[in-house]
Each structure stands twice: as C-alpha cells, then as structure tokens.
Length: 457
Image 1 (cartoon, rainbow, N blue to C red):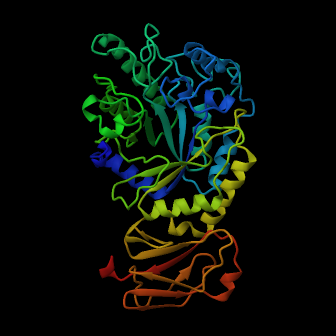
Image 2: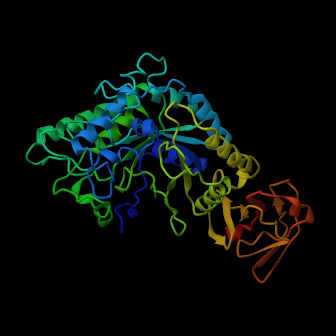
Image 3: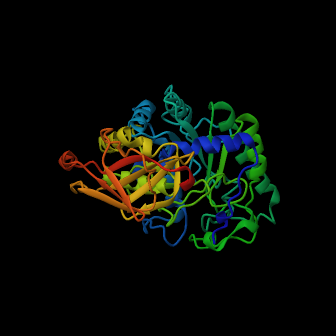
C-alpha cells in the first residue's frame, strides 16, 4: 500500500476548520506556468536523466540542460493577465486555486531573494507585474477563491540539490547526503527560506501544496515511491516538513499542508493524480486531472470535452473528493479561447446544478449505474445526479436502488426547479420525467434533490 493510505487527521482546530471549508469548495484550478510553457514542452522533466524522458540524441545531456535553463532569457509574458485567468475560473464554477510558484526545474514564478533564477530577473523584470505569484494570488483572492501555493521540494537548479561536481543521474539529489551533510543543510535552509517568503509576502495562503514526493524521510519511502521511475538513494532526503509547517502556520494560521504522497500529519488531504479512486474515501482528498493532455501549455493541445469534465467532477464529488483541474496558460500570459470556452460551459452546468455539488459529502451508496448520489452535511437532503452523454435523449424515467426519499418528500429537478413525480416500492425508486425534459439537448447531467428520513441518515 502507498504510505498515504495512513491518513492522519490534523490536531490543530484551525487546520481542521480550514480543511472542512476546503472540502466544501469541490472544484479548483491548478495552473502550471513556467519555463516549460515557452516552448510548450513537458514540465521540467526534459532536464532529468531517466530512461522514460526522451531528448534530442544529437545534443549532449549537459548542453540540453543549459539550453533549457537559458529559456529564462526569452520568457517575457507581456500579455500576462491574471484577471482573465481568475474570471475564467470563476465562470467555470471553481472555488480554489493552486499556482506553481516553483516547479522541479527551480525557476521561481515569485520574487524570491534566495536565487536570481526567477521570472522577476530577466526580460520581464521591468514589468509592474513581474512578481507573478503575487498578482495571480491577488486576482483569485479578489473573487473569493481559497489560495494554494504549489511548491516543488526538489530543485534541480539549486547547486545544493544537483551539485555540478557530479553528474545528475535522475530526479534525486546527486551526492551522498551522509558524506556532505553541510551541503544538504544548505538545501534545507534554502527551501525553508523560500517557503517563508511565500508565507510572508503574498497575502493570505490557504494551502501549501508540496510536490516532488521522492524528497521525503527514508523511513517513509514505500514500494509505490520505488515504482516511480528512479531508484531511491540510501539516504534520507528529509527537508524537515514539521519545522516548515510550524513556520507557515505561525504566519498563516490554519494553513493546510499537503505533503503529497508522504502520508502522516503533514498530508492534510490526499492527491491522486490523473485518476479517480475506484471507491468512495472517507478522508479528505482531491483528484488532480488535466484539461488537456499536459499540465502546462503545449501547442496543438487536445482538450477534454466539457461533458467529460462535468461527468468526472460528478463522480469525484459523489466519492467524497474534490476536483483540481489542470490548466496551462499560453507563454504570453493568457488563457486561450479554447480553454476559456470550455471552462464557461462547465460553469453553465454548475450554475444550475451546483447545489448538488458544493458543500456536499458522500452518501453511503454513492452510485447506481450512471446515477450518482451526494448529500448535505446534515444527511437530511440528498441529490441524485444522472450523467447523460452528449446528444443522449433524457430518459422517460429514472430507476435506482437505495437512497430512499422520505415518504412525503418532494423530488425537485434542479434544471428548472420543478417537482417531478416519483414512487417507491421494495427499495426501488422510480422518478418519472416530464416530456418537456426530452426536448433538452447537451445538458450533460440532470440533478434532483429529495429529503431522506432521519433514520436513513
């Protein structure tokens, strides 16, 4: 089992309170934007020497790393428009943001004092919005979003992580920490100081989302981590998350720490990536899933349809989770019209049906075929959400087992607020849909609310 099966509820009441508030939001946006966006390449991994990473075989590995890092001299996003991003996310019905302040390549999208390898040092330096993360956070905060800072624990540009004395064989630190403990201490200090900058100079932060799960105490390494594509060294790549969390919470009371895949008291919610768990989970979790194929911007991207995203969101929420949708802005600093249009269509569905999604929790029986169930936190009101394929006609009736309405309950259709007739016999509920619904096209899903009896809850 992966280590993070061992979920530990936080002790701090402020963290618990924020965690519950986060669980109510259900739908967020994760934005990958950095050096990799400029040429539309795989985020950071091109500079990592692992068998699955494909590179130009005519260029030496060292040269390819230097070329990648040199992209900093051409990253000049003159149309950078965080308000456009935040408006698009709000139109999509999203409620929280996670922004990549630094990916594994070490390029900082905030004005750190720990390194010159940052967006605010280069062609974009003179721009009034050169401290990118600050303006992204402000734009989303203004629209009531919870704010998350993505931060990569590994930093492949830092000479305290990849020491130029040695080759860089893979994603891990490239020297023996036991032989050079002072060097690793410098890296820990560097990491602590950068996170402290984010916690002190960038307004209210709700989530510290830490990526790069191979950087972890050795005793927490699991078979899952060993299967990720690089051998784990024999020493502990421990950056002292308890100290970082204490510092972060002194400045940002209640901030959620998401030390991805590590488990224990500093993984306040779990983050399955590009997949949905096969069953409902009681502990807090989020699936991070891309709108296209990649996390960052790539040219000629193939995006998922709004229906696919809505259906994925319904399944995730019915299983008790939240959905974090990955969107990569264009290198010029804007979202493309293809991204914005899809987000707007997803939001159109949520404007009507959001009551069945936001602030809900999983029901004991969360699914019957293509009908999914959610409930209010007090368990008294439930929602049945039937997923419909594009151009699939609305059925004449819906039939499901369990999730029985109270005998005197209304069955309200969220699509138009009308009541629809229903019957119940031998634990089977039948809802009759009026013929006017069969004229509806491309509605993606229909949601119904009903009351349940106290003793069913």
